[in-house]
Image 1 (cartoon, one colour):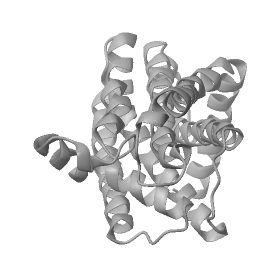
Image 2 (cartoon, rainbow, N blue to C red):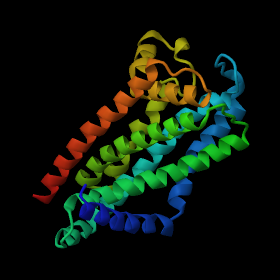
Image 3 (cartoon, helix red, strand yellow):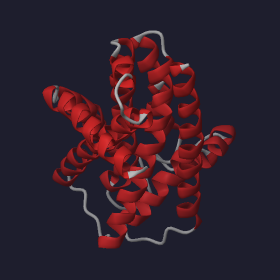
Length: 253
């Protein structure tokens, strides 16, 4: 992005963030479901789940963080849909600003809002007994992966945000994103799953991302899962960005 586009993106991001701050229940709601999952799985179901040693909250947290981001993405798509259906996009197009800055403003807001929700969930997990032996570099790597996931899913959310005909249609796309971690190593090891389910769980992106974050937080070797996780994130981000921009250009045509 050029300097002008960057400055315009910052201005539009501040506008979107003000909307979020005027409705703090958005962040609270985004974090509430993952926190409820932490409480349910750790204190109610955790005693029946064997993860090969260690505390279950340590095993569970990475998957819950992905669910937190997926939940927040739904609100990003809804905010974008509200701007489109409310005529704000047409007003912005009549102004001397870069058209891409409109989308980037929503994307930047999504990253900030989701990282705040993630921080809230991590704080609750710490209160529940989560502990990490990770160093500064490992935590930075975790943050980088979470930002990559947020960017990829946000650009994916831009597509229904631009193309959906109703608010229900916008929110519906996020359901698979929220439930995909349940068919992965996020909640239980994949070894005890039936054959076809186990194959899918081991080869879908959530498992490699969750395993990478879990190993980083536990100060364990990441292995090839780290490269696979980054490849999934970057690949999804590239595809989602291209499709989102095509959808945007068709919307403007």
